[in-house]
Length: 107
Image (cartoon, rainbow, N blue to C red; front, side, top):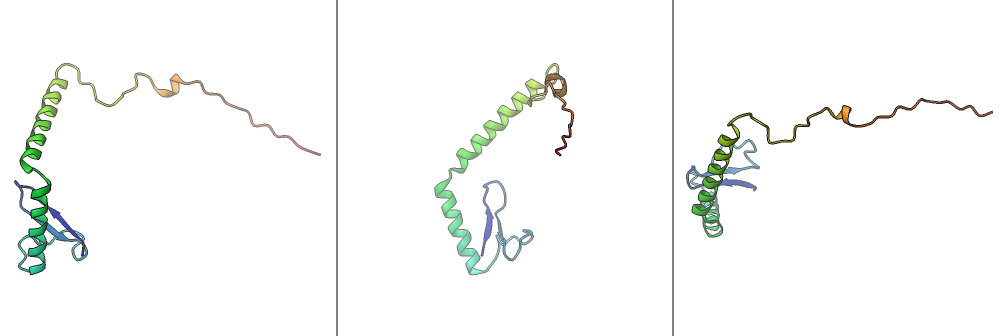
């Protein structure tokens, strides 16, 4: 079996059996089946030992605050997209050559 498990301290636990439920419609988080209960406990323990959820949450919030600050600053005055917007059309910038087609006959 192949499972997809989503663990986030502020959201409900999500557990899906991708072989039986590829569209992820049946959340097994509250399943009474022993194999599901064991799997969920093992994954939750592994996640808590591997990741510091408080630190991750603080980093995400800090990053969101920086992005919001930058977005608000960029909305002051004339808006300019972050991606490169060429000032002229590329066809006007480069030299193009055209060649005539010539036919040679061998006799």
